Length: 291
Image (tube, rainbow, N blue to C red; front, top):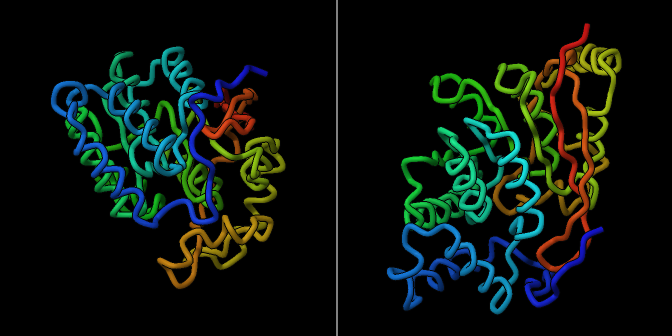
């Protein structure tokens, strides 16, 4: 297990730790800095450092952070994806970090899918400050609706690499939708946050299942009425399942048959949350199709 530098730890995570105005407060903090023009503009690395400083000295932010972020940037440098998609952009930390890395490694475009329009506006402002607006597309709305819309328009036809860090009960349904649409296939690489702790049993169960097991489950689900979505898996704690309870009356996730024949190989990597809490990452490599 690598070591964590406590000097760079974020402030402690409170009971309420997002969607309480701190995201807009971050924007004011960034744009009120005396070095916004001399150091931050067109400099993603400097903006990331400023965000980290806010999260250390002002208020906690649920960012991927430097340590976990390096796992993904190292993977980007290894894989060199042409097109990368993130599900869940929050305030744009991962967008800034990963999009700039994709661009520096020969990539062509980055898509950030964010459900909350206020968070999306923050992402857009910081991406513009970083000079990445022409490289990054920000799509506002539920992740499944955005994926379907981008695919239908022809703007997104293949995902080389995808980062999942959004509504936890939607990880599996969104991956299956990407498989069904042909966005994710052999050669695609996935990095998913928070699947070991606090945990995402349905996602791990799906990507670790055999082709036969996935086909059996798909046949069972096909007989169920899920055209309007379904309730989150009961194995999720209320905190995860009801994350947007103050925004929507009833939370549902999409239903997709996926592509059971697609087989994934996994790699477990240990790292730290920005607060210093140990965490494990699951990296997935879709390497083959099997009957």
